[in-house]
Image: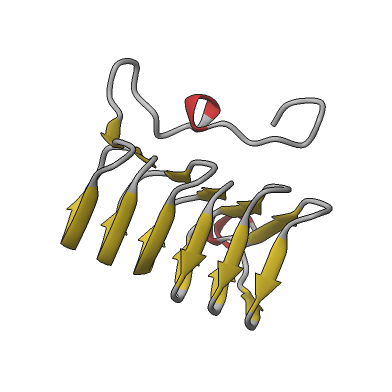
Length: 129
């Protein structure tokens, strides 16, 4: 996390140098996307995202999907239920309309969250107790 509260995919523990799937602006992906590589959405995704890595929704991007990922950073719009094993961060330009389940939630001033939040215990913390 940077000093200003922004969360970056490049700092995520599951990002490997040079590995990032980008859904570019003016691109619409309909269907299911799954994998273990971080994904940055700059365009639009409709359907289902199941990732064993991080998801970043860029400013101006839209995701209309059921989402499961290790962590999620929202600077665009997500419509649908979201589950993350770690952090969900909704940046000031971000909008989430759907239920969210995660171990940590960051909602920056100006962000919009419409839905229910379920916080679960971090599985790593539970193992060390």
